[in-house]
Amino acid sequence: MRPTSGPGPGLTEGRPPTSMRVLVVNAGSSSLKLRLLDGDDTVVAAEDLGPGPPDTQALKRWTGSLGEIGAVGIASCTAARSSLSRW
Image 1 (cartoon, helix red, strand yellow):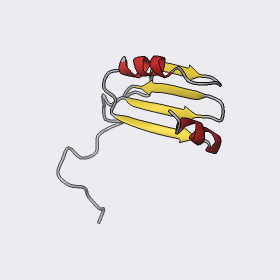
Image 2 (cartoon, rainbow, N blue to C red):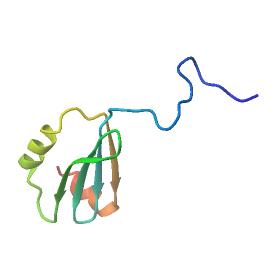
Image 3 (cartoon, rainbow, N blue to C red):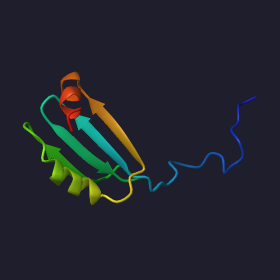
Image 4 (tube, rainbow, N blue to C red):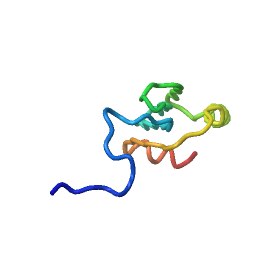
């Protein structure tokens, strides 16, 4: 017998549509790359911050312009964690 899940529509063909937008943060050793993906994994907004002190006001304006974000995914390296903690 195959395990089943709780009540609901069950399995559907293909991937079910979703409107969730995900902010992906890639923190490298000398840069920070931000990507906002829609439900189809299409990049709808992007921002790259290079080495040096970040322009926190510009970053706040950019993130504030994104609208609703359903989730955040973070990838980072050890060197970046210490500089990100200062933000």
